[in-house]
Length: 486
Image 1: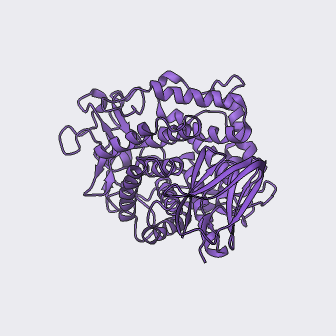
Image 2: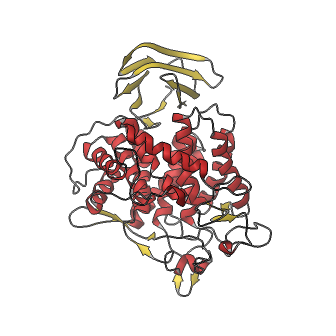
Image 3: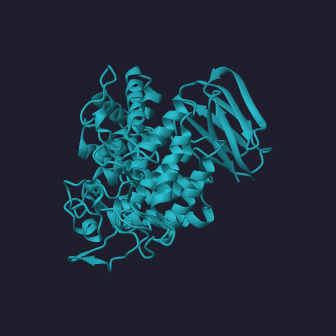
């Protein structure tokens, strides 16, 4: 019998209990960190990432404590006039400050408060004003002229794509793709199947002192930093999740993702399933007494990106599912600890890493910098740059395990609807009760089934006549998602 990659609906209701070891790791880590961090009030990318992961936990499992935590963060950082508060300044032109827009977009879809749309529009306007390289790539920050970092694709392009699809009919999706194709053309080293951390369009500039001054890879930083590539891989998967299946340039992103996935697989440590801080070396690499080490945030991002890409049918399940599963087991074995109260922690997280500017010559992108630099050489516990990706990786792994143990395969979780398949019946449910225009097409654009009429919370159909392969699902006349029969 054909099976549908679907969304598994969980309706678990529980009290806030950090100590419950029966909960899956996504919930345990979310609850542990919510307790550790307390209320969040600062608009910055690590907090945005963490709160985004809390919302994803809510989408999968329910639980008002998760949603209220995220909503309270939105209320603390966006006032009733739509102004974004602490740490956000439009004219800083830093892509990092775009990233919390992802959690806010999710909140707006659920809460519908107008001030959040105003804030989202502000972030989108920043991208209109963001300085660019001569080739059209966004500067990572105003203080890093003509520089593109892998990090920036996660910080801004996910939001850019989501905003365009949701609120602008996809008008600027070509520009989203351009950000990926440009940086990939400059930083991807086919010999190693990896991307250098950053590229400068003006390597002779004083702020780009770290850049290679000659070909090959002129303008690139000298090493492959794991978390940088982790940001990039996760960005590719997240953008492909929202880009319409029939969008003309979508395949360009799929091709890049498959190249990146191959490198991730190649450099996975065979014994632990994790990845090293500097990807093309193992722990025999030593600089000034410091060994290269297995790094938790990058390992979490790679695990998340691989498992999600498999789930969405973007990379080969045969080639990559075992990579993601081994990666996740490596996360638990090598980085996760538990205290006597049942709180879980994640360790071995690189505190931070960057390149320059001219006023900070120690951030030079060398091996020694990534292992011994004042920021990059500091290993920390429960940094949100590791906590958030671990929760996201856990969600993907938990959905996979549900598919294996309950004969249910998970497709997507987003917005206010879920899609499930029970035996031969496909069911679409919406918590808002606003389903009124649902159409399923094949990839040739031929209509296979439709529901029209009064708004309802649920529609269903038999799926026995649907052929295996990718199908398009249009919801309420404007939003297109992909479902995969196999």
